[in-house]
Each structure stands twice: as structure tokens, then as C-alpha cells.
Length: 297
Image 1 (cartoon, rainbow, N blue to C red):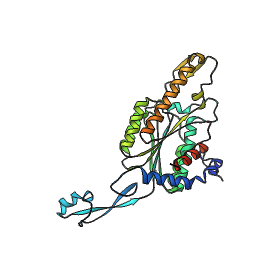
Image 2: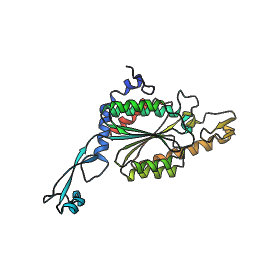
Image 3: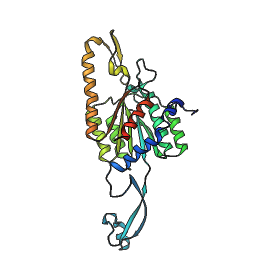
Image 4: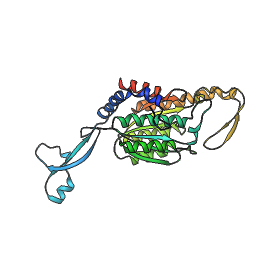
């Protein structure tokens, strides 16, 4: 099978092709399980009015129509059963890091974005893509057409890593922008103040969005394998600092553990799916494992 797109590898798609049915079940679980609503279904669209009859739910009364016509009308809604997914991909400078890995964190996130969009589009869900660093760089609304998917893949292949990032501020802006409930998929290394990012994630939950967080590292960031004195280069600020790894390794590992544990704990308490991985783990294997686990819940 040939896809023609950099981030849609035929071998990976072959390994995830049987996931569509399982993923469909996961999506239906999101739709039916986690959001209370006065209407049935994950989201609804206004369809038409009809005259009020005894026993109708007064919450559906259209008071503007009452003011204009002096008659009671009920708003009727059309159930929308397909999922709306918005993928938020962090393209800041730190996502360009790789030590000995085959790909950068940004490339890993791009592969993950592509296969998620592929799976969702196959099951006729609407998928959008937002990329950001200090600000939103690309904002494609969720749609389900093949033409939209093709454009998304082309945009994905043109992405270049940016500079610094303000994850929390950007997420707050996006939470206000997405008016209709959807599934938010955030792909990032989360290099921002954790408390601020967590408050921004709570903002999405407050607006009744479902959230999945893919926390991406390079394996070297987790294991700190450095032995000799080394000059570290900050890919976002361009700052350079010379370090003897022997003096900082234990403190670094402990702080990283606290960093990850904070996100894992806070996400669990907020009913946010948290998935931590590194670029040495094949993204299709990681995604298969996550979807299989999620489908059993």
C-alpha cells in the first residue's frame, strides 16, 4: 500500500488497520458515557420549531419566538452521532529535540497526528488540526471529507518547529474558541509551568470537552544517559549551559519524576486520559496499546 504522505507509513497503517472497529467503540464510549446533556447524543444541531404541547420539556421553549408571536414553540434538535475531534500539536522549539532517536518529538507527534486522523476519518468522524508555539500557527476546523484529510496531511508535512511556547495561555484561548463539544487530543512535551497547563486543561473540561493528552519525550530526557561534561542547548531560548552530568543526574531524574507524576495525578482526578511515551516506542504500537486499554474501560 502506498499513501504518498510522509507521516502515513504503509507498515504502520497495516499494523493499525484492524484498530478501526476498536477505535469506533472507544469513540462511541466517549459519546455516550461522559457528558450529561438535556439532549440525547454527543452534540445536537437545531432543526426546526414545532408548537408546544402539554408535557413538552419547558427547557426547550424558544422565548424569542414567544416574544415575536405570542405563541409557545419548542426547539427541535437533530442528533449528531459522529465524533468531532480537534488535534492540538505543539510545534515549539523543544519538540525538535532528539538525542540518538530516529525522529524528533515533533516528527513523532506528526506521525501520531496522521494515524489518528486516518483512523477517525475512516470511521467518518470529523477531524481538525491546530498547531501552536507561542501562538496558534495553523487552525483547521474539524471536517470529515477526504479532501479535508488530504489538505491536513499536506499541512502536516510543511510544519517546521518554532521558538518558545506558551502552552497554558494558548490552551485557554483555544478552550474559549471551540464552542461545540468535541474530543481534544493534545500532543506535547508540556514544557511549561505544570500548574498553569493543568488549569488550562481544566478549562476544556469545564466547557465539557473530552481530553486525551499524549505526553511525548525523547528517551534521553527520561534516562539522562550523559556521562561526560556536556554543553546543553535550549532549543527555545537559544541559551547554552555547560553541565557535569554526574552532579545533576539524581536531581534531574527526581524532578522529572515529579513533573510526570503531577500530570498523571491531575489528569486522573480530572477524567483526562494521560498517555506518556517516548520516541523510541513505535507510535502505532503505543496507540494500539492505548486504544485496547481504553476499550476495556
